[in-house]
Length: 114
Length: 117
Image (tube, rainbow over all chains, first blue to last red; front, side, top):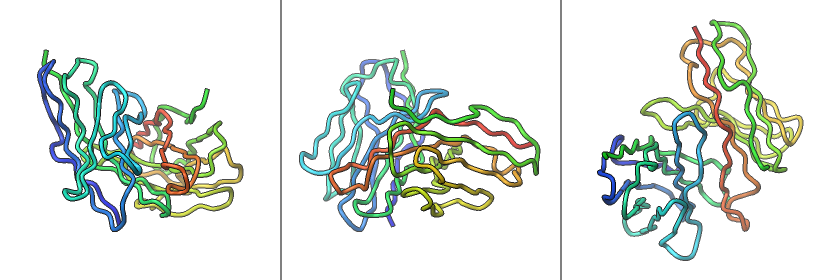
């Protein structure tokens, strides 16, 4: 069965600083990987996804993530944090040709310090 | 506009009073799923449906029922709600099987916050 671990339930960064949110996964087959963002009182919105091909994927709002098979990681980064980035971020894994289940990490709440 | 619609968005009820949370999608998606979100636990899958009349349990199905009589609708039923079912519930859908030319991206509704007293 697949699983996801997000290191750090809360991360604080200063406005303009690098954002790094960590995600490690476990899967018996090459997985599909996703980052979702949840703003207060809203549903989840897809930030970016990795399926196959290029291991560095770019998403919305300037975020990107790199799939590293050797490290079983899919960390999310953004070069310069903006106040509007404050939200909760979820990493998720899905196994191709499986039962379609999307398994989520426990989430990381990102706070931006002015 | 492509969307997943849940109702009600907010509900306060009492223990044992049956309730249904509706979910409807207008994207002709075959796959639909229900998740609950609790602090520190992330999102956990309750039930899912691969197609009409095909449903199966997720990780936390106890106390819930679902049905899939039409492709667009996937209601979540709490026959006898208990306080431990107080949570934020999300319905989601996707177009196809991950790996068959599809990424399996899930589209989420805006959530239904349920409080059981």
